[in-house]
Amino acid sequence: MMRKVPSLVDLCVRVAVDNVRYIGNVGETENHLLERILPHCTLDQLKHIEDSTENRDLSPITDKLWKEFYKRQFGDDSINILVERMRQKKVMYKWKQLYEAKLKEREKATQESCDRLRKRYLEVNAKKQSRQVQLCTKVPSSSAKRSYSGGVVANNIYNTKSGLMKKAKIEFINSREVKNIAAMKNKAVQRSHSVSSPVKRVTSSGPSGLPSSSSSSSKLTKPIQRRF
Image 1: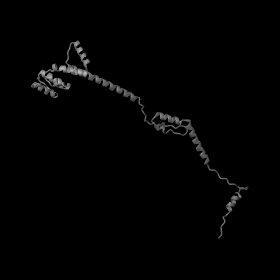
Image 2: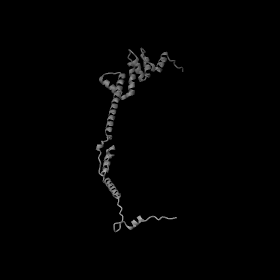
Image 3: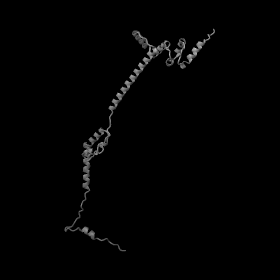
Image 4: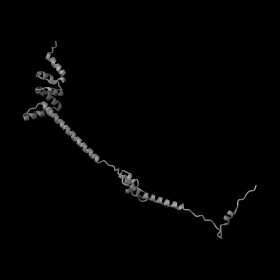
């Protein structure tokens, strides 16, 4: 069986379809040729051809193509709702216009949703930061420092950053154990001073008030010299 030889028009249409991404202004191209070429366009390619074509309305050819794009993007239910509304209001719109309007509506809803989420995030973050504990790094003047009983000076209290640590140190300094330890230290110091005081040496004397014979004899005794 012999294959039919394609006509020159068929060859031209095939070449146009293969290079449809390069088509812009279609000028005065006949409608029956465009009906064979334009269905092979993507959405962006079809929009580019319509925007590039001057002084010509391509909607009689492209309207059904835009309806198909609308169906793919938004579903059959959305199409049925639009058709019913146009029937009730007795108006007709081009599907390209309906597609662009629906796309803007969806983009607006998406942007509003993002704005709400961003606002909610900022509110939660601000609330979280307000609940964080802030440390006080200010050191009070030296005149504010006080001494406590037992001779223990709280020099180190005001250098701490935490109020809880300050309170614990103050309670420790005022505790009974610390006071007892300080009192014991004071007593130990007093004892050490009393033990180390000088004691006078008493020498024995005879009945007449003179030194004893042993002491006098020891002073009079001369060392024996050895003769050789």
